[in-house]
Length: 242
Image 1 (spheres, helix red, strand yellow):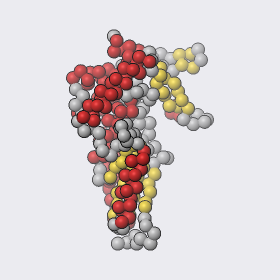
Image 2 (tube, one colour):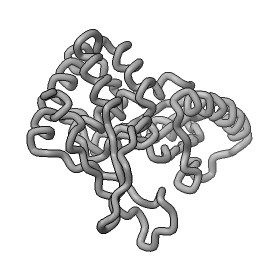
Image 3 (cartoon, one colour):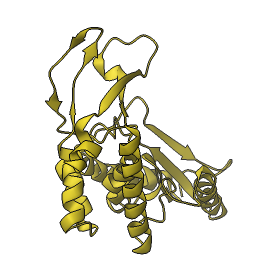
Image 4 (tube, rainbow, N blue to C red):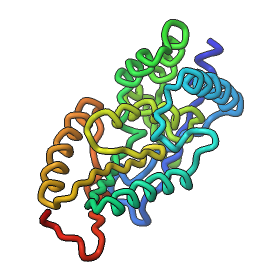
């Protein structure tokens, strides 16, 4: 009963606008509002999981978010250093910046639990997280009108203390899905690859990009193509036909 109280029972959501003039429901971002005791409980849970991941070296070294002594500065420095190395070797570089659409809202609960299990969070820990993700319910309230409560079948709530860490665990294996070199900051992704020949580079990009789609489908995620960008870095006077 105490666990239910902390994890689900008085969970509220605020619908925060993502655009100035909303026309569709997806233009609102649901932000969870936690009770003080629930927030304290999640902080304890967060630090336990974080310590476990750190102790067992389960954080990917290319993830610069969610981690102590890491920030945007070393993330940008790593990308810049790799770019300079490419230029020193007269390589053309292609960077892909995929934008995951509603990463928090689209986290499949069963897939998340499976990933937690394979990272060693088993037995009591796994049961705890199973209840954390499965017993969430929400309703919609507008003025005096209020809908019935429905079970949330997919998402980790934004505004929750531990949710960003769960999203990291959810997308962590993206670094192994292709031959792209990968840099992560939270759920922001930079994929890059280089070659001395532009045509060969384009071929490699297309081949590796095809590996990205099965990963998205397997994890029930999708791209926001309006915010996904592709960029080539070429030194001035570099021949594109080596």
